[in-house]
Length: 254
Image (cartoon, rainbow, N blue to C red):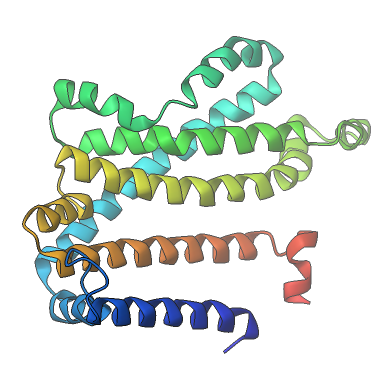
């Protein structure tokens, strides 16, 4: 095992062992089952169709919301950075709407659309939009004007400057925004499923908790956590592959 991973693994193992010991001695309340009970439930239910259906529903909500949020956020951010007039027109709206938690919109969405997957997708997409918009805005603004002017002097057309000057500068910001948006989208999707009673991991979690099945409740929490870790690892690997030419990643491929 790599030394960088050793300490986190040991820390996690120590926390789980402490949790098991405290549960066994009755220090923790009965609503917090021992690790062994959660592990036993996971072992018994990890292959069930009901659980995998909930995972698939959440992943479908996450994927669609991420595509919509990232696309809209990147487009608006690039437009605001490239056109000062658009920036002035939208800056006030962006600064007003960005701090508002998406959960605030849930009652209105439920009244208009009911407890349907589209509610999860729309609200999770809104959550994904903001980090993508800001990262794209910063990335486009960070392009060195001297480099752009030099490329223009050498006769590069606008599409060529976009490909060879702007895009390489924006890509690190883009992937950072993508990773942040991915995590936020998953969190919001599960939260909206839980609160809005929309089928998915969140609704499954609420059902188990409401019926006092605490080992199952924590089992679903573990699955949600592993899902988030796995998705983040996928995007980190994609980022390293796409930016292997960048100075921050070049040493990894030397």
